Every structure is written in structure tokens, then in C-alpha cells.
Length: 639
Image 1: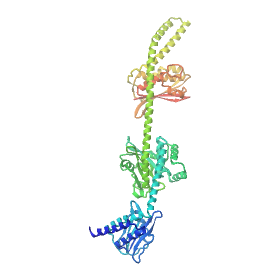
Image 2 (image 1 turned 120 degrees about the vertical axis):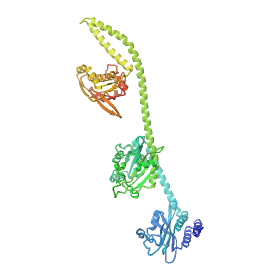
Image 3 (image 1 turned 60 degrees about the vertical axis):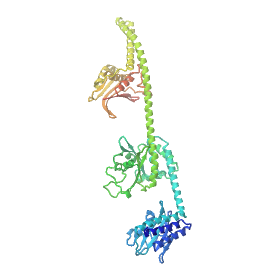
Image 4 (image 1 turned 90 degrees about the vertical axis):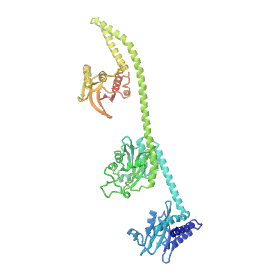
């Protein structure tokens, strides 16, 4: 062991023995100062205690030669040097041949001539207790080994401070830390209560962002939420909450100032009154879509690296890329790489946590009040985003579950309806077959009698009535058999316009006799489509017949054909509308059910047959009802 190391150990041993002795605080520090003054041959050695509440120093012990005396507060002679050490918790060494820069000279008000100086922080575990001062009236260099040793001494001297009356400072800090943690937990509890008040997706997002921006919450100026879209492999803007300018921000803060409502109640009330249209910020955020491959984006990095980023524009010198989607929409950085003299901007990004990883990111900023975002803010925000991410996931899962339940219920109702129809079809087919044979015989014999009876005989009139009724009954039986016997669909390519025209020609006399005007608008560029000619013509006949029956006193029958695309598929649309007064709302849901009719005659199978045929062609039939005016049926058949 060399002599310097041996000397260091001896000095440190003395200081440790004194630090852990039973001496009173002042005597202990005076003894330590004496040991250091002798060991380092100082002109002045002093210990200053730091008072955080007043941001000031007081002299606690000193040792000096004749003509030199320590300042009781250290504020005049050493100026801002001690404050500089207190803020940085770093030692300051001024050697004799090192001339201090102008900033340091301004901090030393009464020092003239050559000198050397060492200011060592007395600190441990993040707590700052005071400063050890070593001063020389002549130039002197502090070697690296001496500097390292003095830093060790500064840490050891913290023992008496910690175990003395200054331990009350630690207790106060500890109490303040406990209060802060309790307030954070209370805040998270209140926000969680608000999140439990709804399962609506938009309201959940609004509660989350309002909790971040409201004064009684986390108090940020603005908050924006983005979720990962795995299908599109991008970050999608979902919502933004915050004022659009400083004046609006001031008005909002005044509005909530002095309110004594519970935070959970306030958040729930605000979310239930939230308008989906949102603010300008909200609308701009919803337009943002950032590819997850864009690794240079701070939002993508937050999701991928699963950690928060606390960015101070002025501190970090951040500039914004020209192609930044976020900056294009919400002007987040207030400038680009090509500009200078940008406004100071502070913002932070925090990942949203789900059960199996990050599901998005929240961006917060203090654009208007320029309040720094502290590490405590980030810690609280990180705790909250774990809670918020789970709430969002639960809401999404609840929505999926609700949709699946509704789909299952609809499928069940369809299945029950199919079973009913199957039973009805079997019964109807059996009854129809039993009736049809004797009905054919009745009709045949009546027609023979009708031909043999002389004109003018009233018996011939009876025979005519029987023939008409038999024809009507045969028509009913044909409908029933047509509905109950699911005939095989024979697909061939046909021109739908030609089928429509043939249908209208066949019904021309009937329509004219009832004073019904026909208006056609058929697109001549429609392609031929695969369909069953007989069945599709039956659909058009049934729909036109319904319109004819609805306009017994005359009206207008409108028939249109046109191309359309839906959900990536091409269709041909056919509209058949009338001016017959429409369908009452209370019975609209029954119109495609078999045997339902509002006419007072017929089987009520016409629309049911249409629905079955269109469904067999993988098409859709819809109804556009306008009570009091008319109704339009829209048939969509895939190309």
C-alpha cells in the first residue's frame, strides 16, 4: 500500500470513528473539520448545512488560520457557487492555475487574488445535507486521487447530519413522499371508479383522456390516444382531449376552479355528456395513421420499446421530420428540421398496456402553461396507463361478446323460423295435394257444363262463378306448392332488363285498367348475370303485383335497374316502387313472413317467395318504406 492510500485510510478511519461516536452534533462536526483542516493543510475548512425549505445555508463548523474567517451563511463570499453545487449534487474544484469563467466569477463576490477552492456535496441516497468547503489563499491543484477521496469523505460526513436534528428533514421528506403516494393512489382509485361506470368505448376513452387533462386529475394541457391496429399494421388516432388555444385553456381552467365534486363523479358526468364530434384537436387526432414500420417515429418507438419518453424540446433539441403524420395534423412540435427559433415544447409518450403487451400509446403535453413534465408525472402516468389499457381491452372484449351474443340470437331466431317454415311447408304441401285432385275434377266438370248451358240461363252464371273461384283456389294452391317445394335453381346467364320488360308487358293491360302509370329507368350497360330465369321473373311478378294491389285507385309504378358495389362485391340493383301509401310501421317487420298479408285476400306468400328466391341467388332484398306516400323494394343480385 503506497503512502497516499495509507494516509487516506487513516484520515477516513478517524472521520468514521468520530461520525459514529456519542459526541453531540456540533462537537462531532467540529472534530471532523479539524481532522480535514490538519490533513489537507487548508487556510479555511468549513461545513455548511443546507435548508431546503428556505433554499439557504448556515455555517455549522469551521477551522481557519489567522486573517481568514468563514462566512456564516456562505451567501456573500461564495455567491452562487454553493447554490450551483446544491442543484447539481456535484463537486466543484477551482485550481490555482485554472481561471474561472465569467459565470463563476459572477458568483464569487469577495474573492480577489490567486486562490484554490473545493466545494464537496454532503449527500447520500439522493438526499442533500450540505457542503464541505476547503479553501486556500494560494494556488493549489487537486489531484484526481484527492478529488475521489474528498467525494468519499462528503458521503461519510452525511452520517452525523442524518442522525442529528437534520434527520427531521428526512422524516418530512418521507412524510411528503407518503402523502404523494397516497394522493396518487386516491387519484387512481377515483379514476378507476369512473371507468367502471360505463362499457361504451367512446366514453371509456373520454374518461381516460379527461382524467389526464383535468386539474383535479393529472393536469396536463392536452392528451391524445392512439391504438395499434394489427390488421392494418399501424397506429390509429382514436381521440384527443384538450383546448385548441391558450385562451380556451384559460377558460376551461377557470370553469373547473373551486369545484368540490368527486373526481369520479365529475369524470362520469363529463363522459356521458361527451359529443362524438369532439373538438378540433379530436378531429385532427382521428385523422392520424402511422405505420408501425416507421421506426423513427417516437410513438412507434414507445409501442415497440415498451417504455415512456419524456421530451423537452428546449433541453433535447428535438426537431420534427417533414413527413411526421402527428405534426401534420396537430402541430405537435411546432416546427420542422428546416426551421429555427422554435417555441419551447414539452411532451411525453407513455405506452398503453394490455394483458399481453402494449396496445397503443398516450401522448401528453403542456403546450400552453409550459410546465415541465417531471419523472413523478411519468411514473403516475405509467401506473395509470396500465389501468387504462385494461379498461380499453375489457371494453373491446365486451363489445365483441355483445356482438357475438346478438349474432347468436339472430341465428337462433333464423333457425327457429326455418324449422317453423319447414313444418308449415310440409303441412301445406300435404294439404295442397289432397285438395288439388278433387279441385281439378270440380273445375273440369264445371267447364263442360258451362259450355253446354244456353246463354241467358241463370245456371250458366252459377257455373261461371264456380269456374272463377276454382281458378282462384288453384292459384292459391300453386303458391303454396311453389313455396313449400324448394325447386332446384338452374343458373344461366340472362339480361335482367329483358326479364323486367317481359314482366311489365305481361301486366300492361292490368296496370292500365287500374290507371297505373309505369315509369322505367333501366341501365342499358348492365352485364348478363347467372340466375334462374323462371324464379327471378316470379320475383318481379310478385313485387309488381303487390304494387298494383296497393294502388287500386291509380298511381305510379317505378322500375329501375343500376349497377352498384358494396363491401368489395359488384351487384345489379333493381328498384320497384309505388305510390300506394306505404306499409304501417307496426307490421313492417312481418312482411317477409309466410301467410302474412294486409290485403284481406290472398295467401300472404308473395314476399316470402321473393325473399327465398333472392336468398337462393346469394342476393339481398330490402324495403324502403315511406308511410303515407309509398314503398320501394330493392333487389340486389351479385354479378
